[in-house]
Image 1 (tube, rainbow, N blue to C red):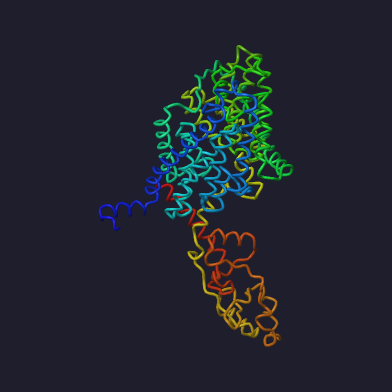
Image 2 (image 1 turned 180 degrees about the horizontal axis):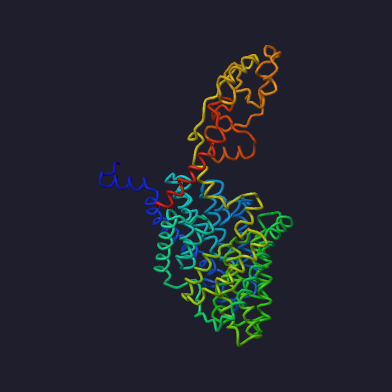
Length: 595
């Protein structure tokens, strides 16, 4: 069916202008990702309802029969194990690291089977009490929705990156009901690209998802944050110290994560039961401290609002001893669940740990210096931000998220102080975040993902190359010398009777024969040719060409046919490759400025 001209021409114009095309698609992604985030949230609530009679564990923690603490994670873990083993690839990188891997290595392509399996697996785990968070799986779901849409529309790699950024922004915005945080998270963590061309569609997707969330569940933030008070600027050093401690805690978590994962792989090699083992370990610890079960958002809100009433074995206990117990146990259970594959979202646990560490620190310093420090709720809020900034290596989006949730400008100075302190301390122990740790262990580099996307989008055929003179394999050395000098190309191709390359002769290969004419009619070209020639296929990208030139110390290399690796199409010089690279960088900068 042919569209009418009045409709066809505007659509064609929009598709010809990436910024407008992606901005239009960002609305679709915002709607789909926002609805997906809500469906994921309601799915977790429905599974929780089957176990504890409520859409969340937090409200009924002390009313749940003891055996549910063991039965729910055991059964949920077995189901998750089945999904991870039979539906997903057990060793595949999942959730946010999986999204980053797709962007770094696969052009942003995420398979439907993988996306659906991860979503169901995490929904079951969180509904069954896994001590994890829903934010990271929601991010992966939003990214997968955007990726599948981009694949359906046959978008190129750069467009796919922006569209996935829209999905990530929409997912975070829907999770926290905070559009600014969603947009900045996508730009800072996933894309690491702040051009207007990427900013506009990502912001719009975050806004659309937030509108859908507020229309469905109400205009309520993910956490009820109290008014923030700072009695004196003399408190700033205490907030800096809190940031340092949160940075150390984040470094410890990232240090332990691969070791716990490795311990599970060694001692529980069967991926079918591994999540169930992790679930039972969680349940046993939760019998002592029920707050360890599930996402723990109720505990976070209570600590922020100074309304938390600690209980241990049915008895009321002092706050500080309880938090001293809760903090290491939450770290332990989150690592157990992550290492055992019983849920994969560590954004929520980072928030919980930061809140707990902040509340503990605040309770201690307020007890020591009541006239100089505020209550523990203020420190809990700052601790949450500091821990997330360090663990996610995303201080900008974390600062703006807490500012957006609290609506308090007074939070900015202590929050920025703590986040900077935490990020610097974490940086001293390594650059990896909770997302990039597993990628680094497998040799996957994500920091230059956008640049790699540009390089992969440029085919080798677009780089100027020159023809290569050829001589037959049985040509005498004298003929080879004449052809080399006459061509002025700096190399000669030696071919067989079918015209296929045997090797290449450069000045380096020929120099020892130049002054000795006695062998001109004795030696043949095939004896002089270098047969260990690195080539690049005609269907390769600029990134492939640069990778070969980086590994080898030569000035040119042959471009060969995709269907016949010995048929040389032309010669690619190092100068031509890097000249194209520099032009690409300049053009990208100009496009970003114009956009």
